Amino acid sequence: MWRRLLAGVAILLCVAIVTAFAIVPGMVDRRMNMVVSAPHVVITDAARALHRTLLVADMHADELLWGRDLLVRADHGHVDLPRMSDGNVALQVFSVVTKTPRNMNYDHNTGETDNITLLAMVQRWPLSSLRSLRARAIHQADRLHDAVTRSGGRLVLVTDRVSLTAFLAARKAAPGMHAALLAIEGLHALDGKLESVDTLHAHGFRMLGLTHFFDNEVAASAHGVTHGGLTALGRQVIQRMESLHIVVDLAHASPQTVSEVLAMATRPVVVSHTGVAATCPGPRNLTDDQLRAIAMNGGVVGIGYWDAAVCTLGAASIAKAIRHAVNVAGIDHVGLGSDFDGATSTPFATDGLAEITQALMALNFSPDEIAKVMGGNVFRLLGAALP
Image (cartoon, rainbow, N blue to C red; front, side, top):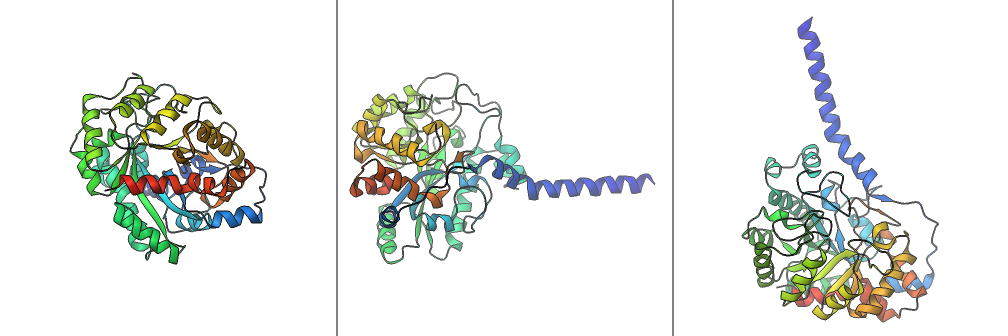
């Protein structure tokens, strides 16, 4: 009797475990990456026509974290290849997330806890990812490499100026082609080792965000404890990144980190996804002085779509933030940084980007100015920054 009972319990446990592996990641994904209900926006023929002519580039999405097949249209979340086609997205920067603290907030976090370990377990990531944050980054990079291989040429990975130029030429003949660029959110993924920069470069990473929600061995976060700047290792990392032509991303960085990087940078930097404090106050939204400093560096800031970036969800609020950033930094230094699939709620998924084009038209941006903001500035920066 006891053997039958124990066998029954074991079967129930196995069923529960299998169910968790199969269902829990999708449930979390659906709950954390939502398109909010909003009044239906009617896109005018003029806006649709202009949007179809654009080379759209988005500097930040976290789709690789969630285990969805990038090549298959999903009924939840924000980014996949079919919806990129619908939204006329030419280039998507795919950033990998390797660690986030529990009770994550914008004001004060430490690196003592981690949400990603459980997600990695239920998604059956390699065992190495339980021991190494660098391994987590490489696993997500491998997922993108696999999607590129399976895409039949519809998706290409951009790693240098040659591949970028080839993509732009090919897209003229085949508008259904899309480019991807690999990035990282937070250099805790280095596992504290300078040589990890070279390892990540070898796996295709070409944009590295120094910090995420907590201070790490490289730099202080805007949401951390110290509110300091670069560490000694961090200064070495910046120099190594520049020598490898890896773009420095200052999203989530503390004000002191931003200042110290700009003081030593010899190449343009980006803030891949952010808001501006003048239109939406917040601890990670850029001040006018920071906007001017990034413009002086030759960099580009990507305006986000989520509530903490623009305060009120909708294309009009995104366009308002873009207008302010352009007024302060100049038309050549502003782009898009959605933070799609970054545990965010947004007013549309990537197939809805014509709403931004229409909102910019409503603010009297010219077609040439819209082309720069929607992607031209990012393509220009990458054309100069990549190896």
